[in-house]
Length: 91
Image (cartoon, rainbow, N blue to C red):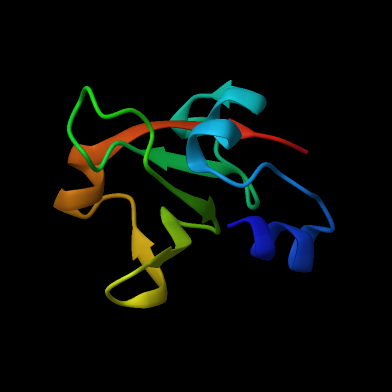
């Protein structure tokens, strides 16, 4: 996410998903725009923010997973809907 934001939006953000979550202005899901960050708790509800992606359009976001590499996923997929923790705008 950090490299993507620098490459495509020329904007530097902190390294970890948790740090990015703290720094951004939190927004509602229905207000998402291209380039906003979407955050997930993939280690359980008490695990904190552990995953982040960059919102594209039409509920799609780009993110990187260690098992599958960089990919585009849908916020409405069961897995991501269950793990969704919030969204934010840094720019």
